Image (cartoon, rainbow, N blue to C red; front, side, top):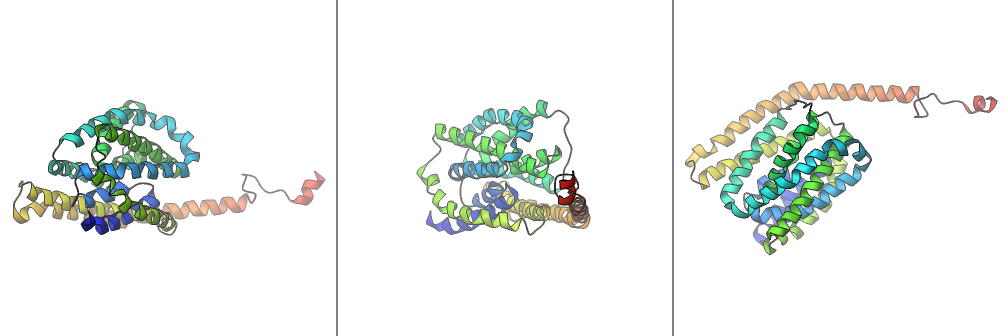
Length: 315
């Protein structure tokens, strides 16, 4: 265990910074890297209790927006439970090598879709919410990752920033809590898994506040996009390594997946900084100008002109 204590601490520290900044991303960054030297069956039960606390914190910080989103995301939350139960059964029975491979294969398209800025709003949220929740429940209980599909889904449906973070915290607190109970019932909390928690907690305690501070000084969308690129490269490397380890490809041919993903992501990254980033910057500048104009027009901050004290007395 001591041989990978330092790498795990470094990985979770970086992931905690991302989580503190964006409200999600801890597992999305930790799992692809940690699976290079740990199995899902050991790693997942260590991460799930930590994620319960992290998601509760995210929801608490954004609790004011919860009434705006709770009814909209309730079908997703209800769909989580059967998905979590099915996913827990998979973790208990599937061999570690193939489970890692399946994890990476599922994550890669989700990350690339998010990186491409995929948007396609759905009219029937309630109709598809339960089915989507079931899929997310399976994905989370197998991988402890749900950030990429949830971010795509909530962004598609036009959730504002505060509402987005509240909805994300609500769904992720439910899925992590359900998974913790299911793991406990299945007997997946081993001594080996629990021994990882003390290695991870200091990184979170330091990293989350740093991320919360950094996000006020850098553009959130740019930060998120760079994190996704890193995530895509790590997942592609994991797939390539497992192709060789599982004897599905030989020699250098197994790393073709990694190089293809790097090229695709480089194109998406170029498009983001060439097209999307300037547009986002212009929108933020317009919003800042609008707020400044509103502040000048309504100095008392209540949507009406301030009334001078003298006039007030005359009235």
